[in-house]
Image (cartoon, rainbow, N blue to C red; front, side, top):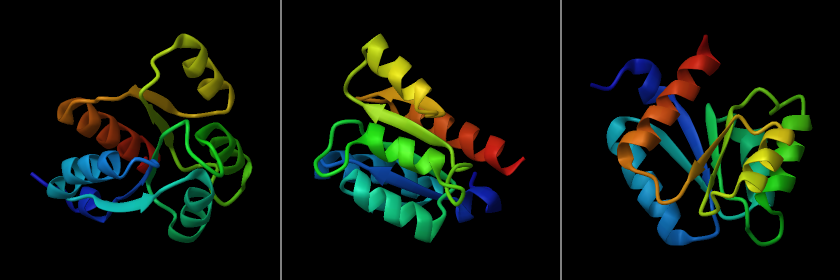
Amino acid sequence: MITSNRKRSKVLIVDDDEQILHVVRDMLTPNGYEVLLARDGLEAITMARNEQPGLILMDIFMPRTDGYTACNILKSDEKTERIPLVMLTAFGYELNRRLSERLNADGYLVKPVSVEVLLDTVSRFLESASS
């Protein structure tokens, strides 16, 4: 069941792969989330500042501005530092996970991710951000 809090929650998905953007969007929208799409870190930074999503799901390796750089900028910006940011990447290496943590990413998911894990993660971060 969709709660009113969930219905108003914006989730920004950042990935240079159109298929990933659409798959993740199609997992979230039927569950009442408003989904925003960005295709690289630079677009994500601008969108996060303007739209103030409740959560950002970001790929690491993208053109123009990668996920590490975008995460660092967003977590260093007073306007966006409190937005939970979860890296959503195909790389499950411990080194990537630790670097993400050092840049203050709030979570780390490895693609492909199941609908259940994605929804649980999104719900958990949105609930903790609103409390």
